[in-house]
Picture 1: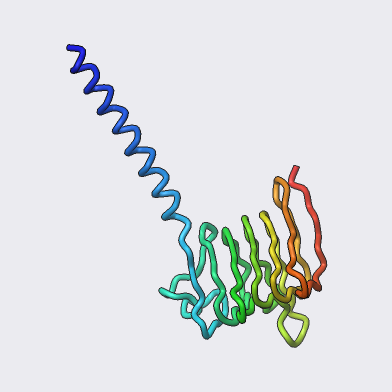
Picture 2: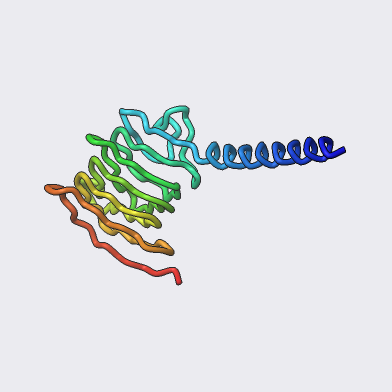
Length: 163
């Protein structure tokens, strides 16, 4: 009888453990990493992205070419790789709910008054050139801004509190 109780408890613990692992796996899977194609393109065009899927609000985005923001969008995280460019087009806003890391270039479009607005909820790291029109930090907790030596930072920084 005691061994039956022990077996039942063990099975229940195993079931709880499997449920926890499944929940964690689903949360991890829902945050896909989306890569731009090396040739780049415009944000709202599927051909700009490997697999043809435009990033969504839960995605971690990696910019590998020249990508122009032609439609306002929200993503979880952005990394601009060395040699890559994230630029504005048609005065659009890119909202990043977590961290943004720049190892390349973030800027406005090279001609006209087409500005890039960034709204960032997490930490900001600049290891490249950052010269877009405005960057707004609006996280609900502490946010860190860091910059590598010898890099450029030329943007309006707006600090907003959500509390």
